[in-house]
Image (cartoon, rainbow, N blue to C red; front, side, top):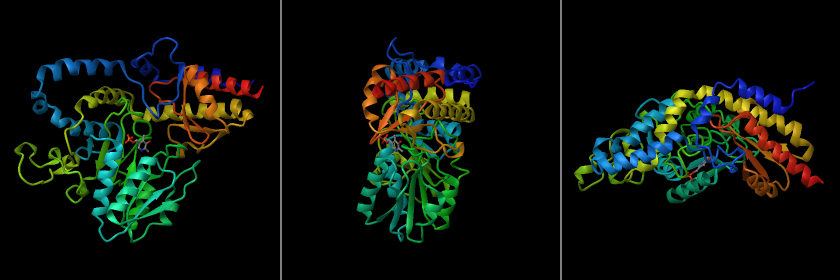
Length: 410
Ligand SMILES: *Cc1c(COP(=O)(O)O)cnc(C)c1O
């Protein structure tokens, strides 16, 4: 007799070394949540986060007031950046900074990068990258009179080193791709693509929004030049939490970001006449950093350091294996297809399922407390965050989906 998904899920939960972390998360009010499958859009909050935020407001903000800036806040963008770099990004100290949003940091880094390669007139990107990445580069290209070279990627797969090799050349200033594709979940070969881009003399900018906190990253080792990512997906920073930027040591001092505000100045509090960038990664700052919004990151990085990103990835692969099995066993008979890579080496932390008319199922799913995420035109993304999601929870959510599909057939 073959073991069904429910039994398999129970066995996986019983053997899960990370299972204990689930109790660190805030339990939603009874009846509100059966299965959270959207960890790739908005991570869940920790109990420790609620406590830290309250304590910060009462003690630090309420107690220290403006003294807090000198006592520690001014350093947070860099110290938290270093911690994030160590725990999740494979980045040694002094190369990661927290602040702004991913979109704004993309702009700052992309502008800095193309200006640092003045003779080169082309920027390479792909048609299936996240909208904000495409829009920001359209704007940078218009500002700088550059040409965008679009690689057509399969929305059910993703960018390859061969495709990049086919377009880069001595006119390429910069290439920009996502580490994990937001639709298909495709995991790009960052080191391989960097080699191809660097051989052509181009700089590389990577968007890590869908991989940070879910897939191990080795920015230093992979030879990444620049990177950005958000902290509200797998890093559980909360809605609109600040983003991070990475700028390789060797490029600091050479690249100049365009939003030159006082917080990126060499001597912010001298309030002097002209702009002079700070040394090192601090030059990526512009205005007053969003300190309050950085508070949750402390709790999340503690948890991730405890769990270890390799263990998180191991569980993530088991979770998405289970999603693939259920898709094949339970959902395929209703016309559901897997619209993404199946092999572990090319798979990020989520799986996209596709079916005509999937949109109609979203509301009944949400009404039942099952929260996946929908991407036009017909994709349902299943993104189980390893630290907050059990195998049984995934099974329960997809059981509701199967029942809805069955009801729709009758
Ligand atoms: C979520 C996401 C973003 C979001 O950018 P914001 O500025 O935070 O809105 C950007 N890029 C990718 C690939 C994403 O997944």
